[in-house]
Image (tube, rainbow, N blue to C red):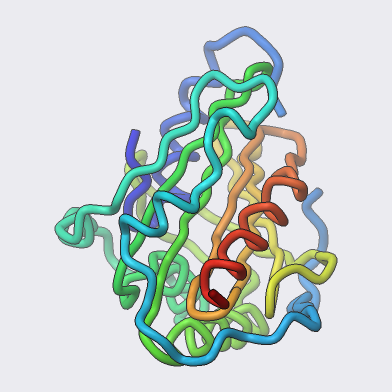
Length: 237
């Protein structure tokens, strides 16, 4: 499965239907609060040519680095994938800006990853997006601003209409700037609960998600830090 535009919704809706009939282990939402952003002391890389898709793939986490996995993929995003999204905008303008930012539509190169955990039904995802000049910083600023007012919205996805609640979370400093939040979506008596982490490191953003149903899941911070450190070194050489 490729992660495409509004990938957080695509992966979640498809797997939620699967979880309703599957047997096995699965991997907290809270009230909305002000955006939980943190910035590390790591200096940003000076403006330079953005990393290419090939470079992003070479820097991506591999299956050998993920203990107990059933496969880790890293695929360059097809630019035509944006054309696949025919859904109308969601009900709240700030939440639509959040979705647009997470889609990385203005990035010069994007690599999508899926982490299939050994003991979980739901995979984790990671999107590495490389930007020209200050566009990564601008993208982070747009998301931070959107999360100040985006708390609830409705929309139409692959399985029909849905309602979603957005709640920010605290995150330890990682990269140059970082944000964490959670989107919960009720569906047929269950709650799709997905963590989102968005990090800027120089001219690259790292966007990770972890999904569960009726429970909270968290993307492994050790993998995120390893990815961010690797991207930082690549941009400072």
